[in-house]
Length: 304
Image 1 (cartoon, rainbow, N blue to C red):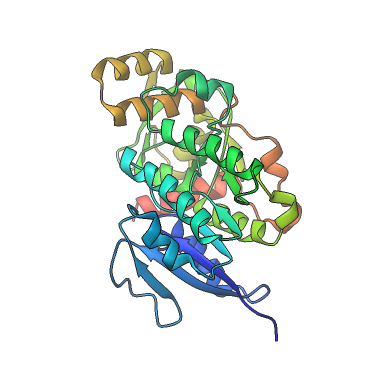
Image 2: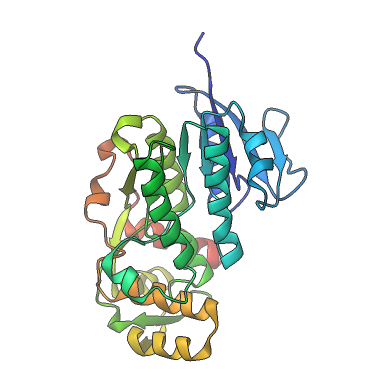
């Protein structure tokens, strides 16, 4: 009888984590013995999932939870600076507990891209950049084996929640820099599938930043598909990303700066959020939805 791989999933009930958890529990070849780290004391996940409560502040505490685990996958949210810094705590805990493999919770555009490094100051991307640099150092020194999934935006989630500039229920759209530049993105389910797939590809993904993509898109393409799916004409506003970033910096508000930095990197054609190679990652084994399928499904959810 084969032994199940022991996986600890941080943030297993969150936006992305719940999708990863579902696939881990459904997998039989390989099979996984799943535990989760959670801020909540008792999420209702059933007796077959071990739950450890933490506030992600103490690496020594987390290291004790990680004893005997084969892999730590992080899917904790990073909507604030303190949340993003929790990844550094997790990395320290992984090293202390000698966990063989670590999947950090970056899940965004390429934070190591030259365009990102040029404009990231003052934004929530700064701790992600620092983590990426630390991972490189720790990996080179043989203290850890890591794999970072670089996925661009959460396209389905972003469309549903207005983070891509489209307010579907209101039939309003914001096009950044004319909406003409291409980016790539993924649905939450696709990212989760790629994470689980990467677990089986140890040598191929060891100490690497793995760029993945489900679809390519532009703001104009999404607008066209939304108007077709809703049989409506959207009210459109165009925003210059350079001017928007300058305005955000004047505000001094970190969240506004972070959003403006992300919008500039995604929509100005810099390449920090366009992964041509990611569209091929995993080959035919990775089922990819079309942009139309994603948009149609989001509209169905939003218009309920």
